[in-house]
Image (cartoon, rainbow, N blue to C red; front, side):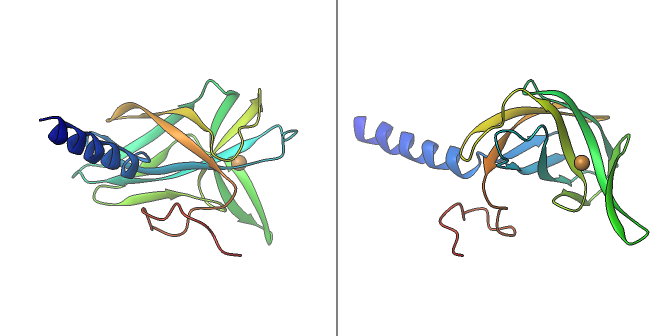
Length: 160
Ligand SMILES: [Cu+2]
């Protein structure tokens, strides 16, 4: 019995680790929220993730908030006169059966007035508010390097 519980515990622990960066909310599946480690003096940071919509109806991300920043906005990068700029967007539609990637040079969550920059390996909470799925709290993993593609198992060493 003891052995069985230990095994169960080990399995549970493993599955928690494997899914630590994925969240389900209604028809939405949110993958690997992360933020790049910034210099301690940087006043802003950005958070990225992927939202899949498994449902038959579109949903919309309406807003974001986090206790670590004075203000959090949805941003996108746009090309204007050959220059990449970012600008605030009011909401982001997650199409039915589709996905939207929040990633460097694309949509991102912009955090302003940071009380303190998080460092590599730390996490901070972020609440995403969707029109249909409601408020979803995720943890943003702070890391030095961007995650490699869609390799969910790969949190190992990164070769330069
Ligand atoms: Cu931005």
